Length: 453
Image: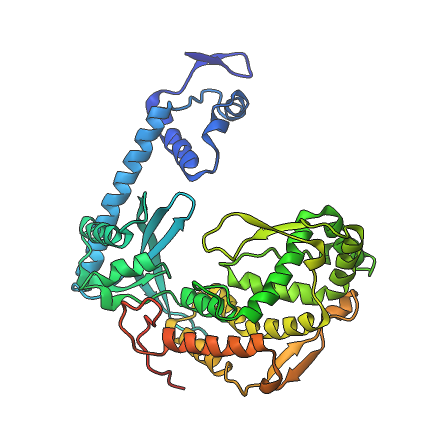
């Protein structure tokens, strides 16, 4: 086959041997999602590539699959050799850290599991002004789909054991396993007698569960109805903002009328029940924009007086229900006492949110340092501790977003915060600082009785 060059000369296309290195890069780009397979089949894309190399040819989809399969086999061989060398160099001592992630599609009742391995490549000596560091390598070992949730713990145990065997990882070489908060994953690790003592649940998941229990979101039944009621009212405001163009435009317009630059106009934060940092962000933005939200909701209620289905929210009265519940326009909004409770709830969540950000962004933070932060958080939840709150903004102006602080006594706080403190303190104590068997998923997987100060 010949192609015509821009000069008018006809030349032959690349041979398979000449094109093979390009086929590998092509297949890798498609597998990684850099370009889609559909895009690669379009004549315009191929014309674009031939603008750089008129002799270019494109691999058949069967060739692409074979290339990806060979790459996978080569990667597994390299991984086996490298992990074996690491275990040999460490004389079969603890040298490989494992991470087990589980998630479930509640619609199809399908569970997914992934395992990552982390090894130390070499220690890095920093300068005199820097602490010594370790150069780590983290890689995926396997990914598995469990088509039904029945006996998932037993299935995960069997799969996990087979995975270690296929990768030739000896249990004595596992330095630790970090599962997430999924009960089926923890059940599987608990059943592995030679590895159960090496499992420590992810600090972030433990903190997440502590916070969600304290604000009444997690659990078969709410432990803090007062906090949940406040969050529900804020969630309704945000849902109306998302479902009504008039409300969204009004929130934006009232900010721009206060001379807020377009790049600093705030949007309300959508509710995400499993991402508890979202709850704090939602409260913070709503409390900042109270002077914008209140008149906007009042204007909407006047224009939609008597409307019984202003928004549709999740029905929490029935566990597992996926049917929405209509909310009347008159039931949307917050009164003065609700706003007072809101700023206290925001202040209550702020320390935990800052710890979450610190752990997320400061990758050098160790497990021991994280425990110190958790200990400080637990101490801050004592009943008598005062709480510093940020009052709602008095105007929509940009300078008023620096809200005035106020300190309130522990005895003067709302029921939502008092109850939340009590629950948070108990959850942190149980999950981080109390020695309990690993099989109690609600208990601590970090076997620490106290933190030295």
